[in-house]
Image (cartoon, rainbow, N blue to C red; front, top):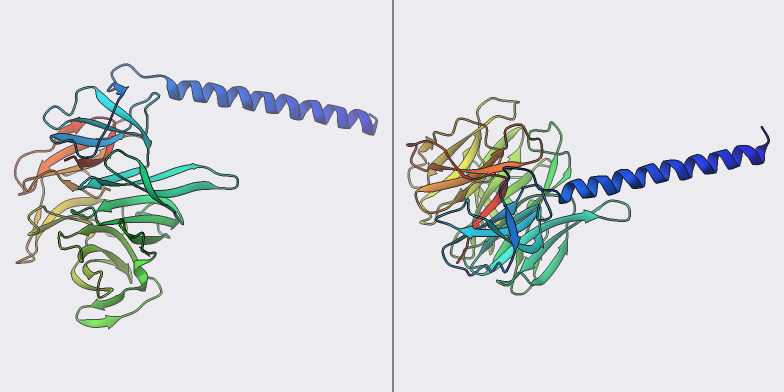
Length: 337
């Protein structure tokens, strides 16, 4: 076979493979637009963060609104969902301000961004992210937003991972890009280590105090921090992804129940006595739970039989009762109004 003929055959093969790839992409896109029987339904409409009596979350149901921020009445969360045009991997809101962690294909890699949105879901500020979105929280006043990304690895259960946690003043745009720059006090003494990682911020109402996870030396800690002093102090060990209760007396968190394994149980810690209470959810909760009120926690668990969808569940925060399904095919819950 001559050189020119070989080049012609190679060119035809490239075109053929390109055509097959194009067909596969089109078919995959078409499948993503299809709804599945039994899945929750969603219809486009207006979603606002100041709607009272509402619950918002990210829609995980197959179809054109997958990944969209949707809202439902909090008294009937399994009704048809009102779908916004905002698509996120993580979302949280408070006092009419939201943070949306988004991801889209880029020229060389995923384009990950944090969007600060107002009550009408209009983007007011935008920040590039250094890695894959993981956690997001807005302070009760809406003044501050925090997010955590993975910069290497894929999960907190991975043997090797690194996180970066940032906090932004949503009014001024002033960004604290990395909590690892804060001074650390561990067990009453100043502490510094190259392996220190932070994730899972939760804010107090005073717009200064926050709680978060600190990981260092193969151990995780609950830390209490001050934005003004740029410092954190450890309070308890074996704590991940804290969530401060509305009355600010307790912190919910996931606790590793088997060393070296990705198995967590949800607990609630009384901040006055540092006494912890395991909750009745016995499945492994790899999520930052949300307080729906002072008595109830909501969290995501993998949908049975699915590798890329979660359902939202609730459980009483006092260690009684039983877990209940809140909304199927959903994640990142937030109370509206």
